[in-house]
Amino acid sequence: MIMIFYFYCIFVLVLGLCIGSFLNCVIYRLETKKTLKGRSFCPKCKKQLEWYDLVPVFSFLVLGGNCRNCKKKISWQYPIVETLTALIFLLIFSAQGGPASGWNFLSLIFWFYVASVLIVIFIYDFKHYEIPDKVLFPAIAITIIYDIFFSGDIFNFLLGSLIGFLFFFSIFFVSKGKWMGFGDVKFAILMGLLLGVSNTLLALFLAFFFGAIIGVILMIGEKKGLKSEIPFGPFLVSGTLLALLWGPRIINWYLTLFT
Ligand SMILES: [Zn+2]
Image (cartoon, rainbow, N blue to C red; front, side):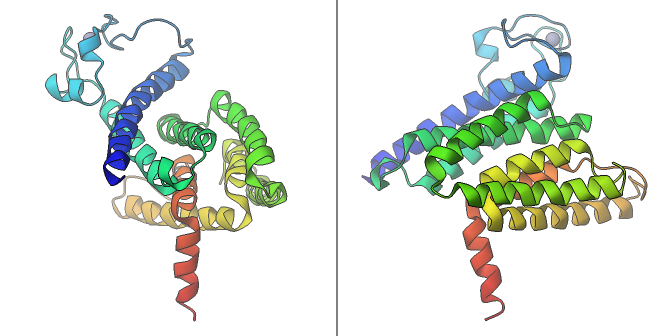
């Protein structure tokens, strides 16, 4: 039985690498406002890529991080997103327990989809200080449908969403959009729908905690002054992912500190 589980794990890793490669493509097409149709090509010299240059991570390593045709550098974003997607897929899969423990195939697909959305938002906001509506809005719609059919406690998720929205909207409103972009306000809606009340609070806490640490590090390094902005989306995504994967465990651990 355990052998079969490992076999599934390898399959999930390979699937994650391939989806990660697709996510890089989604990010690039979002950046250039192109559709997803057409073969992959080098963004620098526009030459179409052969299949052997499209193997996730391995092609990057074999080519030494340079395009086969124009020899220009391929962005580190490509292997990083591929590896990250594979690892997060594996974590989601093992958290669900695999086929032997009465898993729900549909909900596994849903969580793979959610992870993909979060990864795209992370990278896009990190690079462009913007959370793309084209990715966020469908995710909100699909998550509402998922909550209705699978969550069992839809009010918990609606309430989480409302709390997240009101929290960020008040920051946005008070600061007139200076401390928080409206993209973050919209993202909080998705966050609550994914996490429910207690995990949303945890994710918010983690996001601000990470944000503060990175902010201080950047200020000490004097790379960013007090006034310059750091995109908050990557912190929100990190908090959301951690709360999704280990939320109850983190909350329990935190509570045992006081008892
Ligand atoms: Zn090239």
